[in-house]
Length: 213
Image: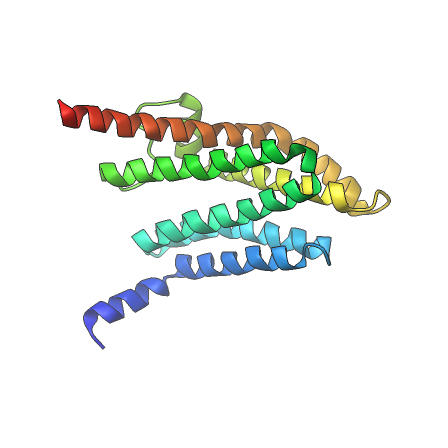
């Protein structure tokens, strides 16, 4: 086996990347059983979010950061959230447009920001040099980022469970409280989705302007 093939093989089997594969399976599995078992649906999504923190830790702990891993992490993050958007828009048709706009802001904001960092040659998209103070707080404080993401996902999971579960069930009452508690930081996370898109777009325009001078 050539050195190139061996290197590629090893990157695919990096611990954080294996965690990424597991996250994809959890997201798809939760989507497959959402109508059959709400408890397992919640457990799969909760495990997905915990592993979201674990893959970054593993990458740093075992010195296994990779470009492939960065892209995989972005894909798994968006996949799990998009599935929740779709479920909620299906059962909350009156909010379909609003949910669709939030989904566009989420995907578009992350894509523009990540692309601008890639074009600029930045090693990480989590370094905000000059921009929105709240966006800087989100990206440069791991605890804030983790809690915000958890609350955002919790909001969408709870919103779906609350809508489809019977009122007499404990999970229905629990989903109401988790929904209410997650709203503030879920709103903050939604704001950062928009803010990072604006930040990335401004950065790209600045590079274009400097290039033409």
